[in-house]
Amino acid sequence: IGRVVDDQQQPISGAEIGFDYPDDLASTTSGGDGRFRLTLDSVPEGDAALVVTPDLYHQLAQVDFDFEGSEQNGDSPLALRPGTIDLGTLVLGPAGAVQGRVLDPERRPLLGGRVRVEPADGDHLYVDVVEEDGHFVVGHLAAGTAEIEGLKDNYRITKVEVEIQLLRTVE
View 1 (cartoon, helix red, strand yellow):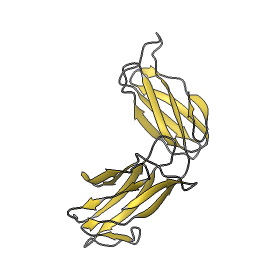
View 2 (cartoon, helix red, strand yellow):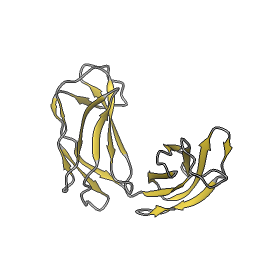
View 3 (cartoon, rainbow, N blue to C red):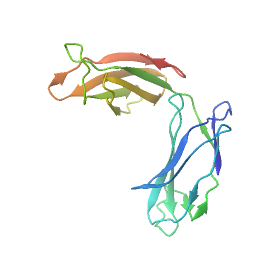
View 4 (tube, rainbow, N blue to C red):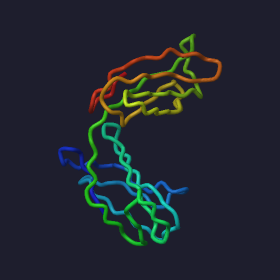
């Protein structure tokens, strides 16, 4: 059980909460009040990360866990057991998003291309250009300058610099 809120303590509804273990071990979605319930039927050995994926305009969150019975490594202080997990309140800060289209020199959508977003903090985010019109959207970005570059075999695509603004989508 738990609750997902923003930095103003307002609930974030529709956030996906789940364990990133080789397979989807357990997952749920937060309700209109930000509350969620996550239950484990069984607990494998090893460690996993609980990943919280909200809308585009809030930061991603990750909490590392060790499953009960696995070797504690000091970096993952929370042990998991079967049953309902009380995660308390997860506070997510604001973020921004960027969207656009990737086109070839003839202004046709570049199908199968990828977009690399490099925020000022040095993290690289990749997204596949999956829409037929070449459209892409990347969210969960910190405010500041970011470089965007389209990638595809045999194509050299110009880098574009954009200013990411919190709680907004930049085109």
